[in-house]
Image (cartoon, rainbow, N blue to C red; front, side, top):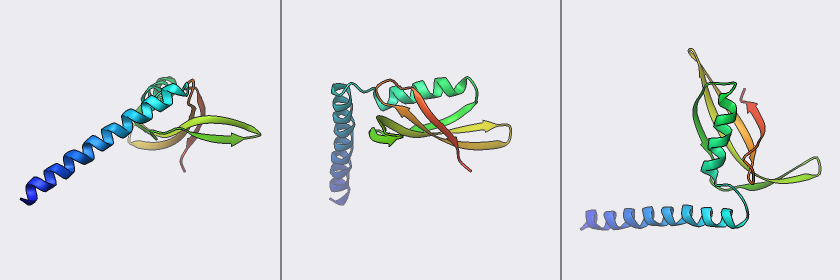
Length: 108
């Protein structure tokens, strides 16, 4: 009995998660924004020209950032770069409508 209830709860949670991702994608497209997956792909492509990217992640939802009196809708994420035995982590900010990399900072 408990296994059956656990399976139902797990299936409901998975369905809710999938619906949330689909809803976020639809909302972003209506606002003229690229999907987080597309932006991550563009950022990795840009950075790979200079650094050997080993891993990457991105927040699924964009948010507004104001800097020097300018406001932009952006995605935030991170990259892992491996060079020999050394691993470095970078944080990035990318423009949500275009996917343009706006900022790349190496973590200390």
